[in-house]
Image (cartoon, rainbow, N blue to C red; front, side, top):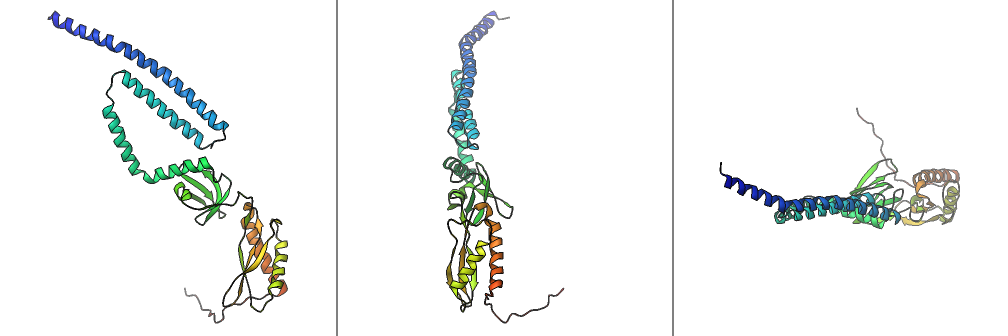
Length: 274
């Protein structure tokens, strides 16, 4: 047995222990204190955002993200104390982040748009909005998409980037919405007379607002009729009910006062085969 070799290896082991033991102790101390501090900071951040009325959807997400970043910083500090070479790790992380970013360009765009919507609050849950001719009530605002419930009881899942890149009409912001209903009358009919008939029909419909007052006017002229527009104001929640009731009331009024409409002649009726 070579005692010299044994003594040499023992001395190397002792030197390593003497060298790394304080570092390991310091790393454990940093780990314990660092994670405690991070937890406390995340709690303070969450409470601060809640006090300022920040988005309920975005608050836990931001708090969690900050927590992950700070914990990562603590782990990097521990690795540095232990003498690890992080140059290669940083290069790998940078390359991975670039690859993920290129693969998720659309999702990242929706994510950034979601942050803008939740921060700037152009609309909130319960608002009636119109985005690219898609009309409905907002039921959920997420990080990547916004869910809109249409009057036909369909859920539209709209990517947030589409919302921030488009003109968004918020009908709830003013507390009212104007219906734009098209009506026709023949050229030989008196417009003042038909106008009074339409106002009478509107007065029989529930949930039409008195202020602002409804509007009735000539919109256009076609080959057979004078195109009229009827524009009552309603609350957003009553949009479709009032639309249907107004059409019904106008038809009844035209029938009551004998207002006729023109239509093309020469329509042929044919049988439907099996």
